[in-house]
Image 1 (cartoon, helix red, strand yellow):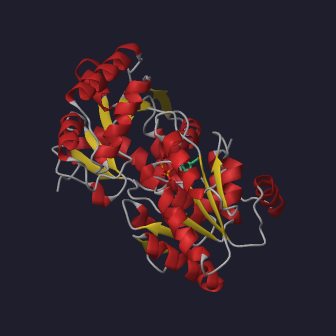
Image 2 (image 1 turned 90 degrees about the vertical axis):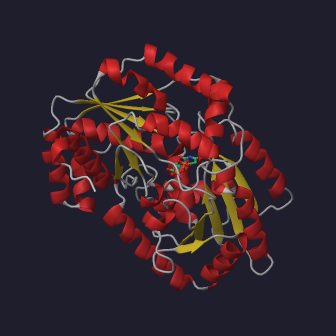
Image 3 (image 1 turned 180 degrees about the horizontal axis):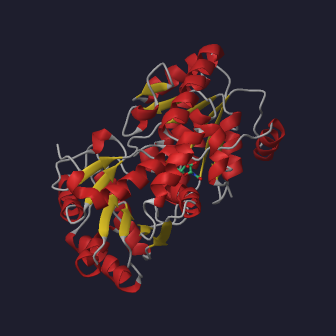
Length: 406
Ligand code: UDP
């Protein structure tokens, strides 16, 4: 496990010292994170790395996961899709059931804390206990809120406005709310197995294990198998490229315990890929960090063709490895990529195909994009900056009168 001082060489001594000073101010305060999965997806990824560091800094940070059955996660996935603008049914019955499961969790969990940091919609109704438990309640939203279906937004808003504040990942997600809103982007951990430097031998070993030929171009997308990551669109783009030049496509990802749609999407992707030995569809088990790291590092080009994206940790992970990234101009992705400077932004299958060809044909240009991308991530999206933003947010809750409302 990494120690806070290990971050000095990458983030700088003053940044690490600042974390110590801020954390000391939170002495005696309990901060409880609650989300809906311990494995899979960006939130679990961040909390797994951040909690031990917060604890080392002396912050009493905890993490609990709400419990739900199959129906609950089917409802929350529909809510998730509806919040991303998809026309999926979420009935009054579903919402009653959703609230019911939240209430059962609230009754069973030990929620007593100074600060409750509730992640994403699944546990949002725990805030009903704010009145009897007290404490400061913050809702942390990791999802893309550019175009939510109005009914589901209205339902959620009723809960968000019971919190003391809401945190969004990108300015584009800010919406009219009666409570304070804060912008804090996510981050990656440069020292985790997912992102640390790897030797060429380790990369070779992983690629050989999957039958990937490192002597030919490799185009990769790493993502949960989710419609919103558009894996089928990735295969279509690859096919357009393949008419003109040789390359392999790797689509790798696992599921998350709070995402029941994964296997259905995986089946669709496998059908689409059938018959082409150069398309490798990998269903990864949890804790495939070194494998993901190696696949990203082995790639000639990394894609993230999401239709919606809260932030897209996979983009930051690939840029950190100085890879040329072609990603959709949606959600939080444009925070990470300045088009033609630190990567490529596109919106269509044709656009993705065009740019894959360009970058495979112009490796020097592709290399420059990657180098710029890495520096952008280093300066803005490492875990140390993220911890600092959270500590400042927590502290600000105790200095409300000094907050200037715009
Ligand atoms: N990830 C993983 N295994 C997988 C697929 C994804 O560990 O099979 C990781 C990925 O490397 C990234 C995170 O899960 O760190 C996904 O975060 P992102 O913001 O890209 O998307 P989300 O899944 O939260 O929508």
